[in-house]
Amino acid sequence: MKKTATTFLALACSLSVFAQNSGELTVPAKPDHEINRHIYGHFAEHLGRSIYGGFYVGEDNTKIPNTNGVRNDVVAALKKLKIPNLRWPGGCFADTYHWKDGIGPKEDRPTIVNTWWGGVTENNSFGTHDFLNMCELLGTEPYLAGNVGSGTVQELADWVQYVNFGGVSPMSNLRRENGREEPWDVKYWGVGNEAWGCGGNMTAEYYANEYRKYATFVSDWENTGNLFRIASGASSDDYHWTEVLMKNIPKSLIEGVALHHYSVIDWEKKGPSTTFTEEQYFTTMQRALLMEELIQKHTAIMDKYDPEKKIALVVDEWGGWYEVEPGTNPGFLYQQNTMRDAMIAGATLNIFNNHSDRVRMANLAQAINVLQAVILTDEEKMLLTPTYHVMEMYNVHQDAAWLPLTIKSESYAVGDAKLPAISGSASKDKNGLTHISLVNIDAKKAQEVSINIDGAKYKNVTGRVLTSKKLQDYNTFEKPDAIKPENFKGAKLKGDDLTVKLPPFSVVVLELK
Image 1: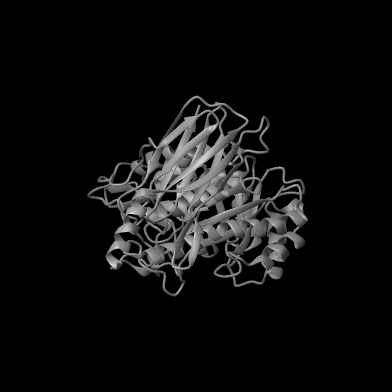
Image 2: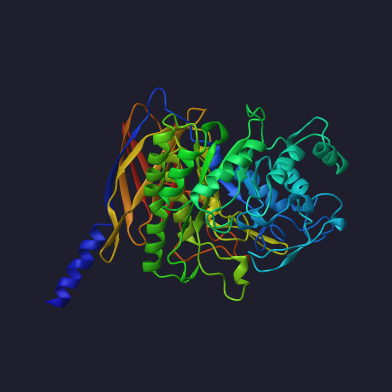
């Protein structure tokens, strides 16, 4: 009897390969808003091998092709990714960084001990000119994080004048002496970082007053330089922090409020990056999908004080965080990047896209060799991670009109816990092409979703998919292309109905014409 029941169950499973889901895509004549390309921003902190050995290998390096010390292969990869902005120099490092130590002749620059990340001594050979010139090389906008924790108002005001003022002044003259005639016109400025923690262990009330002071002196009455000033925002569900900032900071002094949230299993026991169990994967995805609730609740607070949504929610640190790779410096936060990370990236970007009326900027942590990196390097070698491929697939949404996509999803269950298996987002670009991104986080089951299309007629559908044999799979320097996007043939369009068959743990981006 037991054997018969087992056989029947196996037969039933084989006949029900796909779980059923339904959805609706609405294509309005006049969409509400665009998905701001700055949602797809990145982060380069002085941390581990992010800057030195990642972006920057030095002007005298003859083994690795470079332009003024910046790796050519990294530049090419990030340009293909169409990164819209790059945040620097931190992170926690920003509130120990004094920008004047990183300008002028490199042999004259003082060293700095990176007390936050590994206790290593850095020579400041990569500074303001190096970073801003690199951003020009990348075709991306710089996002400078100012030092509030250990710096002064004058120091930050001088930095703004140094990089942005085209006239005659002590700081612009100093810039010219250091070889740069024209200003860089940096728009995005972070006023401190994680002021509740490594940025000074401040209370929300104290930081709000500090922010008001700093924001007053980095610009003039009318903010004629059009600076985009971003306040150090909340950690995950600290809604009190957002409430205080929105209530106490005049709207004329602020353009963005930050939010940091990592997909961490347990801060005391983060788990491995590649040998994780399905239970650990499920918990990671719980933490990642919590972003939906966090954005909803922080947005509700912001809406009370800013109903016109003039102030952006800037999620300038997000991603997965695990234990470092065995044998590496624990302060360098170097971790491998698997299909689990692709799931985090796809699901999180769907959430950002669907809240892009308020979320107008975000930064994956981090770009190279740190946390959920899109690029890993080892001397001359470089590889692109699964997260890179997701962000490359999704860049079709940048500055495209957001389209409402609702999905009624089956559950992905582990034990008694359940999560929605499918998430998605959609947009219509300036060429009239509609793109739908779909993620199936289910570790075992394929999912079929039927989407009814309202408001548009399409003739054909094409797409790409990112998946692998195992959730724990990742690219290596020996096999850098083990995981990469492939043509997707699991979508069928018939009239107003689109049917998509998603493999387990997969990311799919469709193009409808």
